[in-house]
Structures are given as C-alpha cells and as structure tokens.
Image (spheres, rainbow, N blue to C red):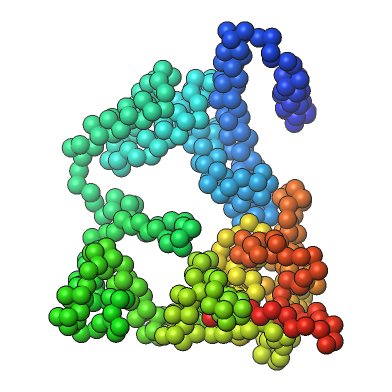
Length: 475
C-alpha cells in the first residue's frame, strides 16, 4: 500500500509538470513570471532531498552486487546514464544528507542535519549544498564534534541569506580562524593528504600531473632529481644523452632547459631504468613493460597514433622511438592462427601470447562503461566459462577488469562474442535500460566502422582469394 501511495505521488508530480508545460506563459506579467520562477526555484532546491532519501534507503534495502554491479557508483552510471563524477556526488550527498540507521536499526539524523533540513525546506540550492559539504569536510581533525556541528549550523544560517560565492568566502574565513593556531601536522594528517593524481590527456597529448608528497617520498625524489635532473643530465636534445656518470662541461653549457623540464626528463629516464632493469616482476601474466596498440598501416606510414595498455594516446613518432630502445612485443593481426593462440582445454590461464593479442584487439576492459585499461585487466572466458567446458582460445576470450570479471562469475552479467569479434555484455534486468552491449571507450574507431566490415582483423572473414585484411599491431 505504501509503495502504491509513493508511486501515485510521483505520478502526480509528472502530471503537474505536464500540465505546467502545456500552459501558455505569454500572458503573464513580469511580476507573475518572477513569482512562478520563485516557486520553481524552491521546488528544484527541494527535490534532491527526496532523491537522497530514496538512494539512502535503496542502499539499506539491497546491495550493488545484488543488482549486478560492482559498486553503487556503477549502478547509478548504468541505470540513469550519469557520469562517474555525478554518480559519486549523488551518493556522497545521500550519505551526508539522507536518513541513516544504526546497526541496531533505530533511525539516525543525517551527518549534516542543518544542511539537510535547509535543503528539504528549499531555503538553499545545490550550489549552497556543495559549498557547505566542502567546508565541513575541510575542518581539521582536531576539531571536536560539538564545534563541527556549530560550524555547520552557523554556515547554514549564512547560506539562507546570501549566494554561494559569499557563502564560500565566509566559510574560508571561518576555516582560517579555526585552524590558524592549530597543532602541527602529524603523521595521520600527512597520510590523509598524500597523493599523486593524473589529469585528463589534452588535445596536444600532454598529461598533467599533480602531487602532494610526504616528507619521506620527497626525500627520495629529492636526491634522484639532484642526480638525474642536474644540468646536462638526461637531455633529450643531446645526440647521446648522459644518463649515468657525470655530464661533460659541453653538455652542461648546452643545456638550456628549465628546472621543471629537467625534472620531467629525469622522471622519464628513471622510469626507463626501472623498466629495463627487469626486477619489476609481472603484471597480469606479462613482464611489466609498456605495451602499445597501433595499426600496421600507421607503423609503415609513420603517421597516426598508438594507445598504451593504460589508455594513453601516443603519437606514432614516439611509438617508434620508444620501440627503438626497448624489448617489445609485436603482434600483427593478419589471419593470425596457430596452437600458441588456441589452447582449447589444455590450460585455464591464458598464455602471454594470447594476452598480447587480446590487448591489441580489446585495448581494455570490454564491459560497456568501464575505462580500466589493459594493464588492469584479466583474461575472461567470454563465450563459455572454463568451469562449464569453455576453451582457452584467443577468439573465445576477452579482457575484463577483475571486478567486472567477477560479475559474470556471479551470474549478474552474461557475455558473448559476435561473428564480427565484438564482445557483448548483457546486463541483469535491474540495470538494463536498453543500453549498448559493446564498450567503445578503448576502441572508438568501431563507432565509424561500416556494417559489413569485420571488427577483428585477425578473424578471417574473407572469401577465398579475397583482399588481405588490414593489420593491427601491439608494440
């Protein structure tokens, strides 16, 4: 009965919206228009509180695993087609502003009760909520619970009368006043703040990197930079860059790089030394090494790009230069067959040769919406699971990250491989809204593929005597 009442209430909201949308507005005066906009603004500010209430109860009622997903973020992304960032924001708001229950079952107030109450009343909007949540999250760890609660109440009192910009300025001032004489940072606070973050690769193929290093981490890189980022060291403009020993005076004098550029070049050389040392072990069945997918045509023409197992786009000129001084694999999909790629029931685990071919074919996790690159993937028996008699053959397997691979094992998703070589994922009913079954993130070129062109060049679909299919390489 309660479920019917809630569905009826939501249906009434839709009916009211349709009625409003059907009414003409050109007869309203500016005063009347502003009055209606006031009501819509209040309602728009209030509606998220109902979504938070429903999301909080949904998470208490079931689990993401039971719905066929590896996380609640994925449930929101797949079911309602929102971005990972938006899904994370909604879940965080539900956790902080939605109702809670204790382990024993009794109801608890939200983590931010004043903010939740103001939002439910329509007194603050989404921008206010973002500022309030950010300000409370930045309170130092030494602030006691009573002061934290009062801090939130005071800021909400400010928010109901000012805009988000003024609220943010007030929050910054109060945070400063609270922390200006705080204790010295301790190991716990430093550990909380540490991190290295990679930004989105730009159109110029450059990737921004930001870092907050602990004293220990910087002490390590400080001495490494002192050696490898010194003037004359690791200079890519030198015919024979100095990467060990001491650079000549001529190399030092000819070095016009900035400190930031020298440190960048030092990072590259230190990474190469680590990769070439051979002491890094294995990553998902292969020696830790850079693997890049590209087409044979691009290699021959020296034009185009390659894509690493982590998803980084690399200009083909850089691919060729990297391959010139590295131990690398080259797999050409040109009617590729043989016992090395078809193991049938001889073994369950894919061979290194099979992994390389799958990296070149799939580029990363094949589940739609997953952005995990090939470096983070396992080999999944996509046609028939090994335990059910499946074969360890390259054209019956696919790449899948560990979390998505387990979703199939648990019966939520099913996978198949089409005659065109496309790996399709069929979602469980709770997440199925008619979305695509193929992941185009790692292979966007498939979106522009003619309907009669095979997806996998290695899968021989030619007529006898037909033209050679294009090649694909992984270097």
